[in-house]
Length: 132
Image (cartoon, rainbow, N blue to C red; front, side):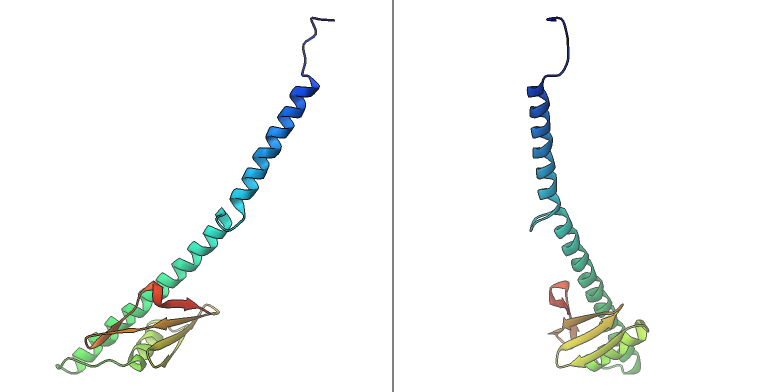
């Protein structure tokens, strides 16, 4: 009987415990405040904000270029001009101006973009975009 080889009950219990620990660590890495799923959601929102910010900046530049072509003097853009240009560039979106804030509805999401006055124009960044 001494020559029999096989797995002992203690080795089996230790293996199961190690597998449970690994499963617990894996689940903790997926969920939680610093989990992979949370980080992926945050990255998706950051990408959407950056995309809207870039579209607004492109609309600002297009509105500025159109104003320069119509008038040789340095134009003073308004937020309404930018909203009109944004709607022209993105026909499926709606854009409304209120003060220095541009409210954009695109792909069933509403974004609020705060514009900063720079010289005779405006500028924005992803930090100035909020998803409502």
